[in-house]
Image (cartoon, rainbow, N blue to C red; front, side, top):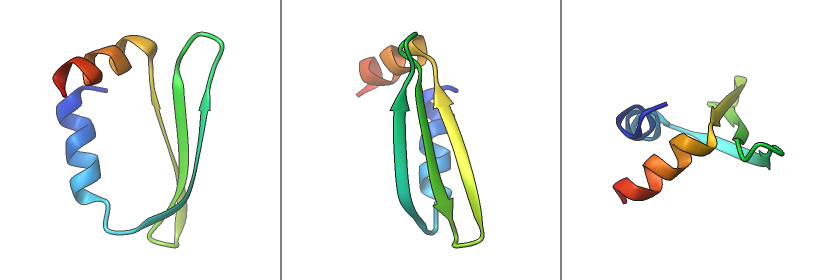
Length: 57
C-alpha cells in the first residue's frame, strides 16, 4: 500500500474505533478496527511499505 493510498484511507475514515495492531515475525504491521460501527476492517503494511511511509514523513 503506497503512502498516498494510506493518506486517502485516513481522510475517508469517518469513524473508526477499537483498533488493534500486530507486528508479524517478518516485520509486517497488521491493524484491525471497527469501521462506522458496521464492520471490521483489516489493513496491513509490509516492512518495506512501512519504511517507505516513514521516509515520506
